[in-house]
Length: 564
Image (tube, rainbow, N blue to C red):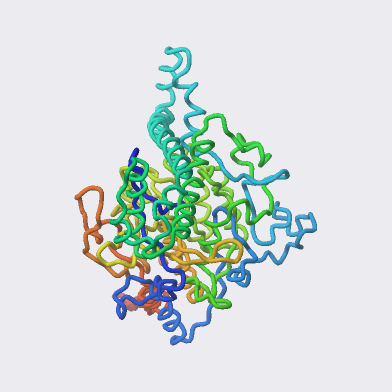
């Protein structure tokens, strides 16, 4: 669910749209998602007042383990290490499975996409894997065999056609974007040199009279950059540095797509060393908790349970009560259903009461495996929290897996222990994040997911955005409720969050005008408020008056006098 700052480029003109980066020293912005809406008019989740409420009731919290299924976590990050779950029954690095759970040296969690010889970094997208698997089945050399297979496997054929359509379109786009940014990287020195040593201001740009097509192009680019207030007055060197950073991010985003994610001949699975066709296989992987790129997972973990340290003010929603269990299953590409199912079961079996899933994909060939794991989590009383996705789509029309609906036509999900989260912003007029998926039936709540400041590898902090960031906000909120009221059932936690949101009727800025209001694009119609959810759960479930026993009527036997 990575997102880049640079917007789509317009072909020959090298015309860019830049979005403003959050200022890294704005401490108010760093913690905006914790704010109290009633006093600040910002749709934060009211974290501190929730803790105060529970403390006022004299409740003492119990630690809640939150499983984070993601790209990996920097477990020794100074803002996380104290809140990392540790498997106390496992002796670190002795090469033995001390607790007998089938996983050797799983002290902080497990990695299902690694093996003896390393770890998977980039993997295919699922649509690529589906096209590769089913193209010879449905579009092989024999048209007669193709038709027979299509008739015999209608579900698989429908999935293949959907995957093929997306693959054909998006693979071409990825290659075009990678080529574009590669070419753009070469002209950055020329673009910056157009300033001729002057600072970047509109006045200085207006004074430049281009004499060549190259200068006109460069001036057009600089005219876009100067629209970012943070860049006004920057030197030529600073402008060049800024452009290099932006293009580097774009290349890092599109290069793996163009060369590996949409490459039908690329398959890194051999690294793992499992029997991939054995979908019931559980014991594979390694304990490389961080993996090659743990930015995403580390950021997610900080939103749940990061805590202030040094000069950093960042803290997670459940920083007082949660411990993070890391389960690595998400590569730079699409996660595989087998790994997701095993990750859920591992987290459940090792004590997680909440599982965060900030990932997703367009198709899911082995979705039944994941659904079985969902049911397993339900049977064990574990709450699942899932990101709605970043495609700016209605997920009833464009399913986003894994999903808790067997069919988008179903009235209700098949389990009651999963909550799906869209992303909101700190801008009340544009409350739905423009990338967030939505649906009144299939998205339960919205939570802050834009300009979210949290932990990243190398002991650092960054702003990221996505429903990937909104989901852990809800996972953290759920952990707080369960810490103070451990007897709550997953469905009661979900009801408490859904019924207590702060609603808004602002324009939702949807791609279509149908039901284009914020209160109509999720079940709840609003953004979660942990304080209100705490009150709701305490009143309705924790402190609810027990039902009075019904007194059974005592029937007195009448004495029957018989006449003689």
